[in-house]
Image (cartoon, rainbow, N blue to C red; front, side):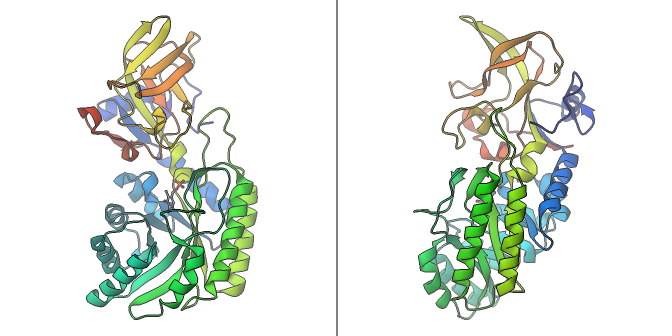
Length: 401
Ligand SMILES: *Cc1c(COP(=O)(O)O)cnc(C)c1O
């Protein structure tokens, strides 16, 4: 399932054996992200994108500054969801023209920063629009606007739903025409629409259907627009496999739907660009989390590997970041990949809570203190999505290899 080379006794990251990488980092636990795997994934996505479709990186998935800087020249833009992420994208050298700023609850100060920077605002409410109007006037600078639509349909099969039904995200589709008509006012520059249906979708045909329905909706709403459509961001939400049962996303139907969406869009609006914003799919499989075994305990017949890393640094692997049922991430003993001796073990962290579990009753190489536990598929929603202050352990170290 993973993209790392498991063919030696020691996992290799960017050509380095894991134990040597741990020495280089100088401590455990840590996250490591593999540059070459990220570049290869971006190239693979480009292969299926119709010519002209823009590929954006959703910074939220992994906001490590070095990683964002590395990705900047490889993608066509960045999507951010806070002033902090906006700073990261700008520091990385992203052209402000190619930055989109989404998120419910943008503070006035953030809106001001975004207008000053000249990035595209994905507007999520009427209040936000009127705040932008005042800010544009105060700064004597146009506010570039795309309306984020909460669609009138909901998609099955996404891990996390973020569109359709009653949602805090975006503007209900039925309210959009009135807002568009009210937009032909000084200071606001209408550029297009944004629809984001949800995250961690592993079904290509469902993503394809979402693209098709989204572009239909966009074309209907664009008739009320105060200016020609220039930009349509249709989200992403492409998933990656985490557990043995997960099938890899089939991109064939997605590619076909993208080509059709692009054709439909440019037929009506020749200057309009279609964009995708991908987070997890670009970086998720290129990262690992590494923790050292501190203790091996046997409690009433069950083996527990107690490590120096845990849920405070990798909440998702503990099953507490959006999962309904806890399922194990792929976990290996990174310095004993070829071991013949194996045993069922539960990997826990150092926190005083039963939630601090990285792997539950998994078949692993028999491990002892000093060994390195590796959680694969950890390049997205890891360090930054974890409650690092919980229980006062040191903050996370991340390296790009
Ligand atoms: C979280 C988010 C993304 C990234 O989602 P992935 O599943 O990581 O690709 C993209 N766009 C918006 C608006 C988001 O909220």
